Amino acid sequence: MKTLKFTVPLFIVLVVSYLVISVGGLGVGTLATSGNTARLTPAAQAGALTSGDGSPAAAAMPDQSEARISNDPYLANQWALGQLQIIDLWQTASGGSGVVVAVLDTGIDPDHEDLAGKVIIEINFSGSPTSGDVYGHGTHVAGIIAAYSDNGLGIAGMAPESWLMNIKVAGDGGLCQASTLATGIIWAVDNGASVINISIELRGPSAELEEAINYAWDRGAVIIAAAGNDGSSSPVYPAYYENCIAVAATTEDDTLAPLSNYGDWVDVAAPGFNIYSTLPDNDYGYKSGTSFACAHVSGLAALLFNMVTDTNGNGRLNDEVRAAIENGFLQYPR
Image (cartoon, rainbow, N blue to C red; front, side, top):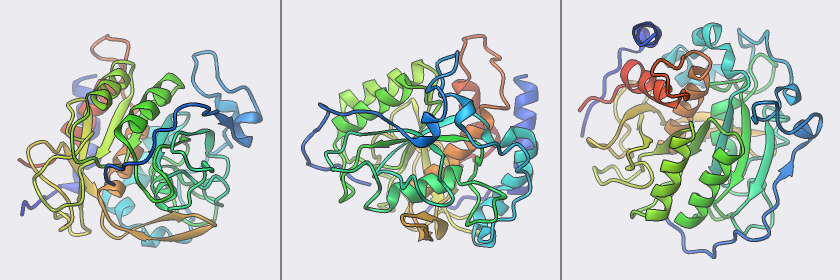
């Protein structure tokens, strides 16, 4: 078993130093890609869907510009935020303001008290009759990424001023096909997502899925995927692909979680054990797994999109965001 030791108190220094220097499982359900209609949520209906640059309109997002010190009652349950010093980073990163994070999962409860208005658009590729979250996994992921801060309710997300896309690719039993996931990835980037969270693991490779990952990366998205929960070095997909950031899970004492996969194909590690977050029907609770480590990194990526600049001049920021994560934040010792 590999032991991970972070120098977590130094992470802000490492990230800022980098910026200065360089400026679960494969299902067998039926693929349902026809007749899928994107539905604007009430937040998006309040204004235009897109702004001038093609990204979802910032005007639809509730103003959280003053949310810098969190008064959320369950903040004490969120050991990861304290360990990662995320509240301190909000001062620099504007809480991920305006960044769109696509959650490809079992759906999101858009009416949860700590997520209401966060989901700007949703689409259901899963074959389930609802884009909502019956299983409970996607809502938990969404809260880790983007739950409101300083609203006197529940928890605080990693990037509390970011927006969410609810792209339901897994059915109500938690299963997902590779082809469905690929469809969701392409839809996410084509509709303005900067960060794509994939808390899903498939056991084998898929050319269609890899092509979708490459498509999203080439168009400026950061794709973050869970490394899997087998406690082994065996790769899972899409985390194994080059243009994904593969995320292992750690415990509160900065060691690899017993359930987490590991290996030289893993890029970073983040808190993923006993993670407290949102659940459907205004509930909250603990879950463990690389799914939730993945969500922490997606939230971090949303913050970093407001911190980096296009230092290599390629017109995209995803490579700078990825380098900041891998070289200056959650390094995974080989």
